[in-house]
Length: 110
Length: 113
Image (cartoon, rainbow over the protein chains, first blue to last red):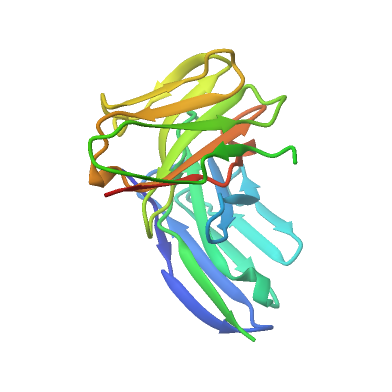
C-alpha cells in the first residue's frame, strides 16, 4: 500500500538532546497527524495539524505543517527515556482513509 | 478502562484455518476503523464503519476478509483460509468525529504457521 516517507528511519540520541524528524509526500494533503507507538500497543495521537504553515505544540513536542502541504516536521525537546518508541506521521486528503508513514524509531540513551 | 479493546491480543493459527477478531470501541464513538500493520511498517487502512454501515474498504481487503459491525457497537474482522502473508498486527480504532480524532486499540497480533 501507499506510504509516506519518513526520515530518519531510526536514531539514537542522548537523554536531554533535541530530536527532529520529518515526513514528506509527493501529494498535497489537508491534514497531518503525528502518532507514537510503543511496542505491542496501538499508536497514540500526539499532534494534529490542519492548515499549511500551522505550528502546534504539545508539551515538549512541536510539529509544523509545511507551507507546500507536502511535508511536516516533528521536534522533541530535551528528550527523556520514555520518548523511546516509533513515531509515525499520517495524512489524509479529506476521506476516511489515512496513509501512514514508514516510521522513525527513536532510542534514547540515558 | 474506557479505551478501545481488542480480543484476542495474540492468535496463532495454522495456514488454511479461519480466524475472527473482535473490537469494542469507545462507547460513544460511532466511527470504527480497521488497520493492518506488518513488522517495520506503518498501519495500512483496511475498512471503515459509520454506525453499522461499512462505508469504505481498501483493496487490501481481499475476498477472504470480511468485517461486520452488526449493531453499530462492536465489530468483528474475519479472515478465512488464512495464509502466511496474513501474519500481522490488526489494529482497530474508533472516533466520534473524523479520523483525526481516532483512538487505537492495542491490536491483535496474528501469526499464521
